[in-house]
Image (tube, one colour):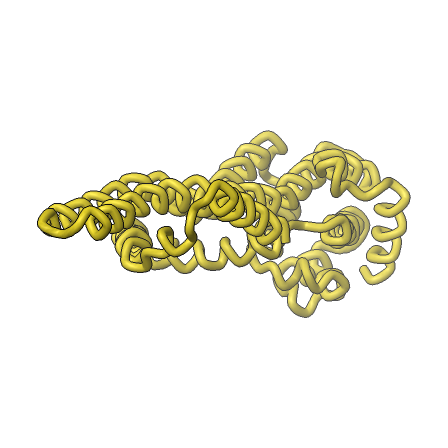
Length: 287
């Protein structure tokens, strides 16, 4: 929603100001200049990136427009699952704990938090490290190092789309110059025409420079920045899981371990202690 509002303000001020100082919008409407710049940018984007990144970039743009970031309830769901699992790990048999971890789709704990279960990567992250806890051979600092490495890898993969979009934004001003040069070449071929016609051709060429710079810094660049913000926030649940399980491995009671995880959540989305307690007690009853 913020992206749409921002684009409305940007276009309104840009073209409104241009018209207010006596400019004519018809001069800016040079569709073939936009085809040259936009088409070249898309083509270079396809050349520079694997198809997997290209598809993920489309998905990332949708997430940026929808602002698909974890909400307080999403964190409560994650904490509820962790609390129930820690209770099972602490007080139940190994076979019962393995049943939840090996088959999360049929686990009452995960079924109580469908949004967590729907996120395959997040579910796998939880189950993998709970499985290591059950094995009991790994030391907490070894688990922490492994978690850090996996989180780093996941974050790197998630931000590939942002890097690809930013690279495209960085190249757009140069493509705008290319379009402008092509327009000037066209104008040079019409030197025998009247000054009025020649002026229109030169003006059309200059639109290419304007379009390239504007698309880079007014459209694609800000969307890339928004993708980075959204994707980084999507990684926050992994940090919550990491801190919670490490505290549990170091001997903290499940409720205290949850507090270690809760404190890693941004203050803007962080649920209160009472909200966490209510959510975890409810989730714990399903274990």
